[in-house]
Length: 194
Image 1 (cartoon, helix red, strand yellow):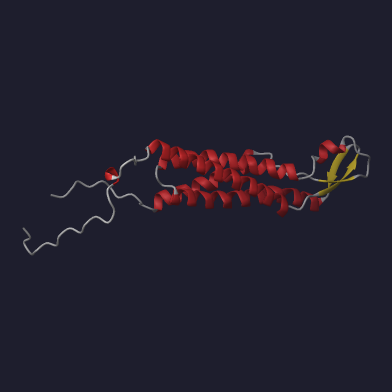
Image 2 (cartoon, helix red, strand yellow; image 1 turned 60 degrees about the vertical axis):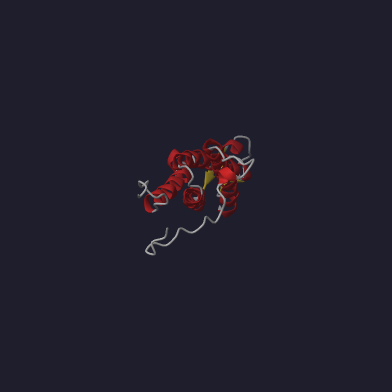
């Protein structure tokens, strides 16, 4: 019997899922697995695209063969460093954006998201490096061994040390950490009120 002091509860806007015949709720493991695969695939595609972009933004250094060795001038040394600088810039930016988007949009399971972002960013860094190196000219030091003196050769894209190679993963983890620290998407469990 209404007491006139409290408002009646509104009717539910959607039917409960248990009352629908033939429908079963999805297993949390299936959803988490699909989420992880989607994250890794997206990171891989973006990593390959970043490798293409890296190659097209880079100016290959030029050099000359002398005594079956490749030598470059000061401008060539700057262009050689430019390849590593572009790699770090592109990888950090792409990793940061993907990390933020992944953590914000795919928040079903934070632990699965974290592991998938780590695996995906490692794959993306590898594919970026491989695609960029594949598109660039061959290693001039190897080509100089069989070239005549005075032959002009262009340098190759390469990242020889591990800190620049980790920039994709560092950017992605920074993006995930920012979203996880700043947002509180899940409400804490509260006991039901009587």
